[in-house]
Length: 140
Image (cartoon, rainbow, N blue to C red; front, side, top):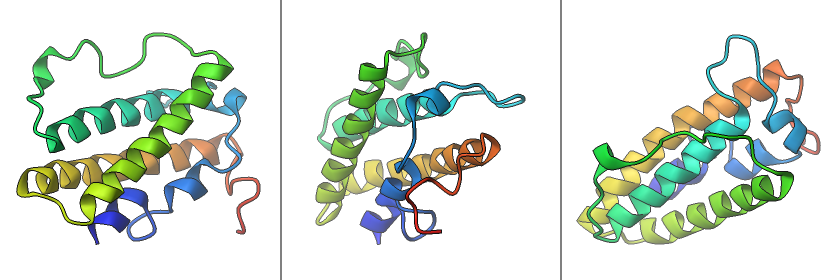
């Protein structure tokens, strides 16, 4: 159940489905009234993934001292591609940990699942507002 909560398919669409067909141009476009772009949400998701995976591994994370929870500038298309790859790699790592988590890892992974579900929903909503949902290539 924890694995499904991390990657989607239980409470929200699978992450791969959410990201399919997402173009750089749409990811960096602002939506009137929205606090963040899709890129900013994905950057934030990956940032928190890294922090919570570190916590799951026993690293001491000082959440108050983090320099920035949100990106400060628009990425290049190559940086955006790396971000998408890192999101998938971190997600695979989280799912692997979720197979048989320690008590420490379980708490961090539950936090990650709840945090991520919220933001994945925002990504879908922004794609809808941009006219980019259902995602191209998705069997809707």
